[in-house]
Length: 273
Image 1 (tube, rainbow, N blue to C red):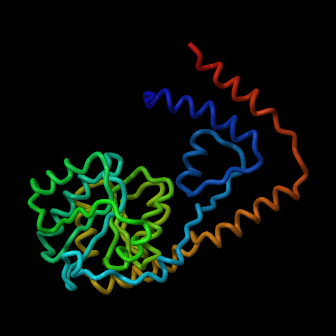
Image 2 (image 1 turned 135 degrees about the horizontal axis):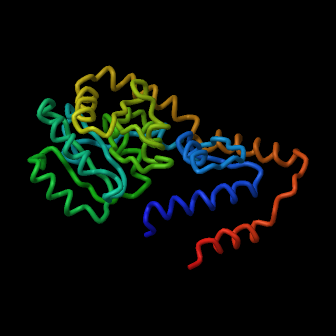
Image 3 (image 1 turned 90 degrees about the vertical axis):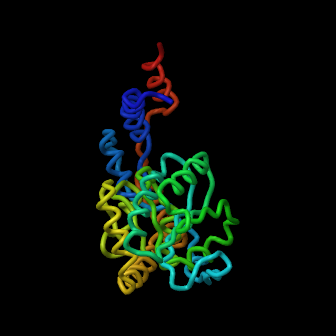
């Protein structure tokens, strides 16, 4: 992996030239558009989310909680994704350990696998939340809508998302989301409307997650708003928008663009040693 200062320098050299060779750049989020502008990209940018097939999530039937060891009165929180360092899961578990001190019927279900699984299982024991936490491992993707519909809220502490597919699917299932202000998640979740967003501060995150667990009517209200808000990510909607942009470019007078192969060779030449 390149050192951060070298990779940033490479991007600042590469991205503006690359983007200048095209007529339009499509960004999946406002946060990524901001990153591109900070890299000195001057080409027109349109924000169009990556399309998601949401119909199955809109229509999902919940799985039986009893079959998975949960009670009907439990406040069931769900994380779905890789168990990897970039997902900030140690932070999430420490926050949940604070939640269960105030909400005894709170439960956390983690779906997925990854290199941190054993480390996270040990942390759960060290935090004394093993009785409140369940690692379910990898599941067939076709069962995901049912898992989501079974739960009360979706939780994530990741700050490295560009297009948080699991968050969008959770919203499509009618779940409010607890996350951290960051590109991707922060572009998808509206704080106080479709869920809660916190700074990357453990007490602040824990406090908001505790509130989400305690206030049943608020969760339901946010869940309904989340389902409505995520419709803009539906693949039928995003496909129409992309076609509109393609048609607009097709009907514009053609502008000469420098040969990209020559540009790329020139960029790489600068980094030769």
